[in-house]
Image (cartoon, rainbow, N blue to C red; front, side, top):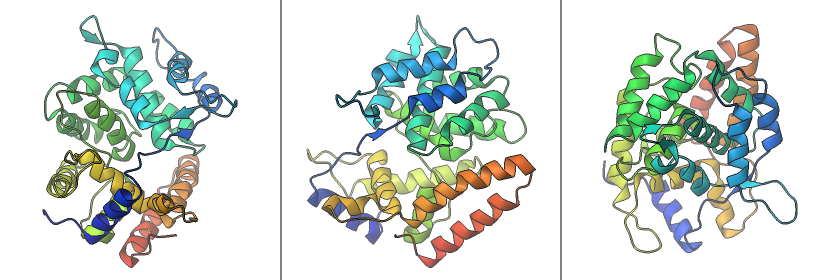
Length: 310
């Protein structure tokens, strides 16, 4: 699988012609995260989640015009570096939880349901902090640490409370930043529903992103490894896995359409992602999986039709 899909080549060409634009920062709402997390009990930790949010706020760019603070990929990556996470030779729980929250803030973006879902992860597993810390240590311990951490969660997640409600779509966001920030581990990028729909439509590959499946993540990484040698960055250096994933994400969401300043409407992928939050919350409230299953069928139907644009 060394020949990139035509859609990936076309996206790369648009990115190059636009001047190799970096992923932009975006505004976030610290007050929304504080409000949801300040009352979250994280089982006798020596710190609070609002302490963690404050650390992120202090590292976030503050616009001079008083508008909302901006967060970006590099800021989040810095919070996941071993130099930040390891204190006196061991992984510091508060630093790990701060990094995890930063990856969730970045992952949920401007949507309003990120604080609720993140709090659910931290409260549904009574050992959530220890398990996040274990994940961080595994991910950064070796060249294949990201895959090892993925496999460990997959083996623990099915039959226990181990990081319950942290599916691979957002769990791989945490793994991505942990590995991207490490000089030891190979980067293991995000594999979420946006990526899954792109792979089905443009590569003819079906990935599972709603449960932890070892083989599917390996298939995904093998595809990225097979394609990345076909592209280079602005400075001429070869692509890495996450560079390919960024192009896939940009194309699937329709973000690449703004590279040439053309107006863009909300893509179907964006609308499906926004609808997902409401469906999940209804499912939680009435304890029924019917809504998420129907939405999954709709997403699959859209992917099969090829109607992923705006």
